Amino acid sequence: MLKLLKEVFRTGEATHLYPFAPLEVAKDFRGKPEHNPAQCIACAACTIACPPNAIGMETDPVAGTRTWSISYGRCIFCGRCEESCPTGAIRLTPDFELAVARKEDLTKRAVFKLALCPCCGEPVAAAREVDYVATILAGPDATPDQLARTRELASTCPDCKRRNDVDLLIRMGIERQMEKRI
Ligand code: SF4
Ligand code: SF4
Image (spheres, rainbow, N blue to C red):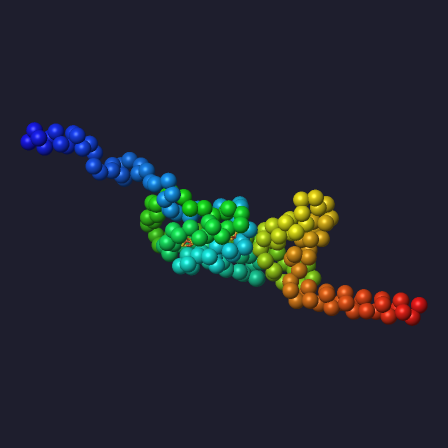
């Protein structure tokens, strides 16, 4: 008996007190992906990268919104969403306590406004994504006017872009004809 007690004291605690005390996880532990809507531009890169389709995106053209969602019930904690996100809006955390009382609570959502095409008014992409692209294209030295013009171009839908290009080509052709006559 004494020998056994000695062995117990020598070994110390062999189990964790969790859940009565916090459980420390390894440095690179891959737990719950945390989404920060304030940083998200609704670009959908993470939805394409996510192997089990735990992340989804739904567009409502009538309401003019795009809803981003993540289902923690489907997530396999692979970290591909974090790798693919251009803005760092989704990151894996050490949190592994995902139990909820209701199945619906496993899904988190964020709603984003859509940008409308300035020519036809059709929804094009998330307004934040358009702003992000316009800021990169315009460059750091762009004036507010240049930025506004770049934003307008970035939010023009492909059909209107094509139509505008054709109009421009026709105008240029007419001007050239006029120059020849003069
Ligand atoms: S960690 Fe993997 S499975 Fe989970 S949401 Fe991100 S990409 Fe999808
Ligand atoms: S990749 Fe990042 S910015 Fe794009 S939708 Fe996903 S979380 Fe948002």
